[in-house]
Length: 485
Image (cartoon, rainbow, N blue to C red):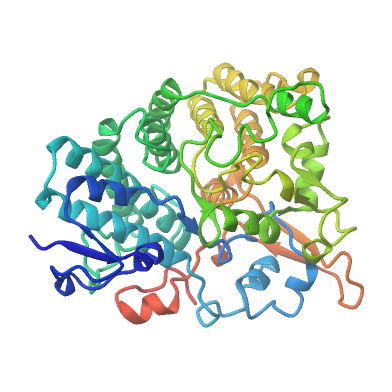
């Protein structure tokens, strides 16, 4: 077998050349990958980022500085999505790299899966590497199908256009697009076969652990409406890691009551709730900080939701209206922005990867969907006890399944800020009339030189399906749009 050779800069950019172009002579400044251990190392990628511009403002969660929107209503994703502009042609605006991010990571995993069996090394390392690579490959297919296609709906999924399933390392492939149902079948098969083979404690957090694998499987089952299977997978995940940080302790540290080193105890890769570190942004922790400046402003509606309960520490610890940089924030809009000084090094808030808190909420929703309202309430209250000050933390008992599910949806909004979470939740819940949301946004608020308008995003808006980028469509004519644009 030929040695696989990568230039270091090419590895960081997640780009490479065709399979036939690999050579056996190592160029200066390059490394060779010719052992199972080296392939295993390729799976961990701490700089795993996803550009959020294509979908960030298609929700009731985020807000923007007005000057970033005014004048861009037809020519940028931010402007189009913020004003819910269905008349704009999204197929001709400059592409962002979200699609490229997803399929570059899939390509990287396929490189491992396709080549590791021919490398020197133990069968155990090869088996583990393939299980980890298949888990991450499933994750990126899950992101892709929920971004660029309709939400899974049992009645139509077998006919709805999905995304391309990429199972092999082939830079020249022009695959046919699979249906939404076929993509979900692939994802579920990948995870069911791979997750049991993952380690409970891998060599570092950037390799997928078994708690993450079962949490991801629970998330997929939730979107697939397999409530019993979502419950089972979530329970397996929490049996491995059910850690929740008590935000009351962080608040006590900031008030000077405790001497513990909470100043950076949960920063960088030390947050015990995080099951997988992934980002909104180009890559890595620096970009994560930049993300909170550009897409870290919560809407006036979110601010009001937080303020309806006294001392929700998810708000009071991490958001402020005063003392923020005016370059990224409009004072007086009613929106609040993430406090930059608590980002990454002080407290790691993984915006795309999974946390134990999400698994609690997946399990709670699965229990509620199955009619187990008391158990669902217990799970939500366990999370809230770690997030709100004690006198106000417990959710009042609810008797209706629908009311319980709505309470969980609200808790998801407040717990799972940023990333894909609210965008995906709106898409899946909008297929159910009892949970569908029509979003209205009045804008601008501060700027007086532009007429104020109210914009509406219908539950069935085509904006919820992001078009494939032009560059990908040009390369693969089989990649037809899933919208009517």
